[in-house]
Amino acid sequence: MLEVGKPSLDGFTLADKLIESGKWEDLLVGPWQAFGRGEVEMADFQAQLA
Image (cartoon, rainbow, N blue to C red):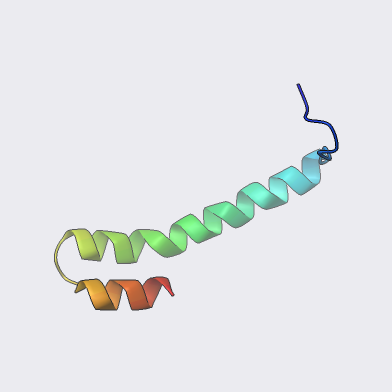
């Protein structure tokens, strides 16, 4: 059920958005894993996210 006034996107636009969010995820994996292993300090991790 769609909310009133909320536009529906075509399949190609939705696919582009999915690909774009996948690229962001790929960029975040490395810094997150390094932080989890204790290889990166909190300040450096936050700087990488910025």
